[in-house]
Image (tube, rainbow, N blue to C red; front, side):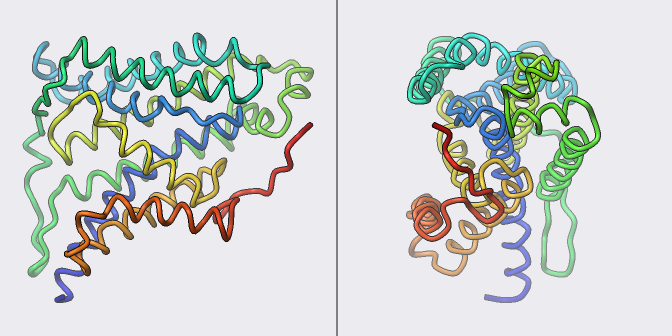
Length: 297
């Protein structure tokens, strides 16, 4: 493989890893606050992509306006899911919340098939993202650069919220001890709803960029990215935003480089993500940056 091709694959891997990282952050935020895996997260990604599709094709809105509406709509959907499916089970055994999360995922997918039909739909790609830059023999689409740059902006914004604002302070306090935080006067339900809103907004943003990179939408488009992002969150250390980013980038590089260096195994590219998951769970169950949490009785 030439050096030019290697750099080309590196850019592609960074783009894919950035998408996994952005989705994984949503998983890790909810887990950090509630110790709950929101398996409907990948389906909110799908809904966000559909919002952009209908905004551009059905309503004729500019792509930017459609993207903003999609993020806002996905945020509201995330709050609704938390209110209906998770809040009533806050004090129930964790297996009940897990079953509810899986049921919500199936419900959103089935509802999308009924409402949107199962037929894949094309996605409008803005012209300014389809041009490219040429560096010697390396050709970089502006879309390839747009995805990691936008991911970096969103991650920096999220870290600012987490470490420089009162809602972020409340979120970090809830992740340590929810009952003590409640006794200190924090409106825990509102903060948890805010967490779901932010996580769902990030899922919608990743869904929009995923649909730009792979220009079609369908009701089951969020399943595999959601599962791989969950793997990325576990690899990086679920509960850690920085770990989710690192895990996503690692997963993107492993997937792309495996196909690049071993093209005969390209049909098994999805399997490598789950092999990594097994290896991490065996040798470092808390992930790269995860904390060793003791189960409370």
